[in-house]
Length: 306
Image (cartoon, rainbow, N blue to C red; front, side, top):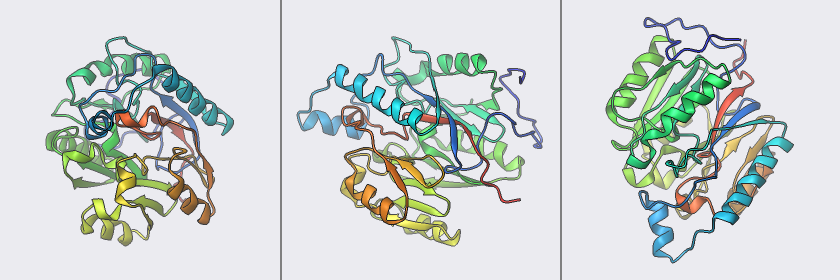
């Protein structure tokens, strides 16, 4: 059992990685995952996806969303993943997107700072959950905003973090970057337009050295950076970005979870030898988040080569 703390991080680096929790990649075998609750979920028009749903006349049905959330949980469990739910709070309608209120590192979770007013209280239930699980918190963002949808433990030794100036601000990004670089890891920053919500609607790791990227939605410099790391890219058409089509979760062992509606990427994944697990979350994605947005990995097998 680890001693619960709000600051496990050592100021000068050299923080000891956790033994029972943590992750060093987006694609190591997923063992435990933290999922946001569906209890109080409703669409809010604070992002482009939800505004588009409203403009198209789509109607939210909580019972359907609840059933789809349950289907996704069952899919994780059938894949051998232990699921843990964030405690529901009736004042927090976007808790379902459990990716954003914290981010996991090899040294424990960073509790983030949310941008939208209706999400700022999400820090409280997330801290309670980590205390319940005896997972020490690496540290808490206090400079600006940082949300988990912009943060990826891309592969061992490398963090990719997007910042639009809204959901993740330059100040929040810079604070996290200082911490992680003192641990000897590289932090790649990528600035983008706030229209895209988070970087995980444009970029996803599917497996080791394999990524899905909407090349038309990112700058050529980011594409070249991926190629320089010998990461193969599956290009995703821009219209699929609007449907959260790049928002997927690598489960490890050449398995990937993606929305049932994302037929195009599913076919490309299968062509690359990946097993596809595809729950229907069509009542949830119009709110602005997909399967990646709803989960925060708590424990993955290490992908580091020794």
